[in-house]
Length: 245
View 1 (cartoon, rainbow, N blue to C red):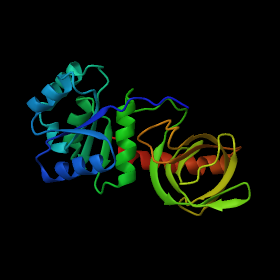
View 2: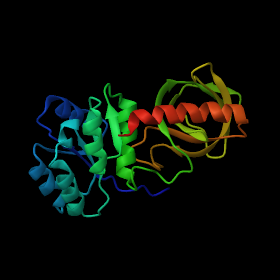
View 3: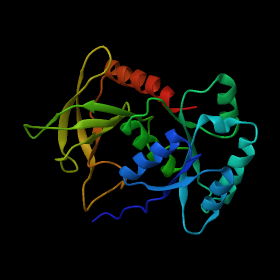
View 4: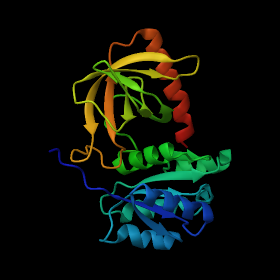
């Protein structure tokens, strides 16, 4: 049985605001360990506490005010591990607000409307640390595509949860075993792309490689031609702009 990593906490800042309170509820419904802070001072106390290991802090764009860069530095300094990533959520801010967020070291974003797939993806990135980047070889973005797949001559139901130019994570109640070859359609702009891949790992009860990922499997694509690789790369790069500050 594969050992799973301990789940860190997600902190929702300005939690008294209706939109942020609703976001906290959604995170709890997704089984994230979620904490709430109504003020920056309360957030500092939570992050510094020995009772919580906060890895992700979700904040509204209004916190890009002039005092916030210092507050975010303070939060990171108080973190027990030092690995604390911020995700700005809500309306897309003005250019001036965006500059302040970047200056404060905020890189990850979730602009309205916030889908469950996008929320789960960005919180996972933040909890992974290292600037929100997982140790993978290429940029990855969330998707919410219903896409069945074929394995061993049998059709199965599934959905594409995330995508890069080299692979994908598929949600399914019937994941294939590691090493199996599957085929699926990706509904890219301009037409579906039929593609095959190899299962890298399955995320299933009793073998949760990533505890916050849905049940399913990670797939590495096989032998993409240059045109197909370019289509995937263009889609991923364009989509990623919606998830960065």
